[in-house]
Length: 401
Image (cartoon, rainbow, N blue to C red; front, top):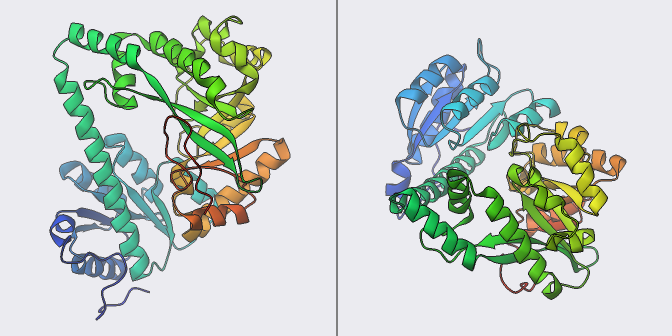
């Protein structure tokens, strides 16, 4: 239980050097137990956070819409609207706000829903003081990174003064587009079994993939982008590790592009080495005959992977609709798995299902050895993440420590 007073500085509490930054972080706390509200509020106030409290989800949504909050913490079981419903309403208003959900009655179904709806963490009551502060500190860090990323994208968008300028910048970007690669490794074999190809740009107006995709959509040039990326990947295939599979991200527009299905297209020539990643967050509803097109890609020799499993909105429905050869566990599900029994149960269930369906599992976003070891204990053997290697050109060396 959280103590009413403490003489020590708990793990997760800010030191004086960062107190000014943390003091600006605002937390919205929703729980129908007044004693817990008071206790959590005291702990967070002592750590330097500004905290607003409400006793039901409806009041929480109203307060959220009238003020800027960095983190939301909510109990799941509350009278009237539940914490899960509150989470959905908050993310409909602002998708980037981290939400921590708490429950006194944890179960696998609730945990899966919390992850699918976008909860950053799923906590079991009673939540210790250290755990609360650690989770809020990480949530504030996530919010800060998101704001920096959005700010960079906004600056890039402001630089583009008109469509002609953007179109010219897009042409320059396509001309200089290059592919970084990140290894996907088998821990048991201690070898690189695949690489993911990731587009990179030297164009100042379109400096990162998010800005590139935004411009491609705005200019209606997604097909130009997809074809260029596929040509670049085919061109570097010979320089990649011998016989390693190549993972290629697809935009829904790519699946509707007949060039992808051309047997003479450069990427089709190496289709047996290529795994096409379809992200759960991508909407395929507007792609005509999408399942027939997926079958046609398999006929050419391609395999199909579901990317970001656990982060999107379709949940396990992707298994039945796409029948993937590979699933990649989203980094949000992987991050902190070593300290989360809930995430371990979810991943264990997914691994068990994939084993029965003969689907390969890859965990992405590994940043520390403890995450790798927790996943090894859950029978996951293939990994991708900064702990092993960052994307680079040429193929970077793998850290096996």
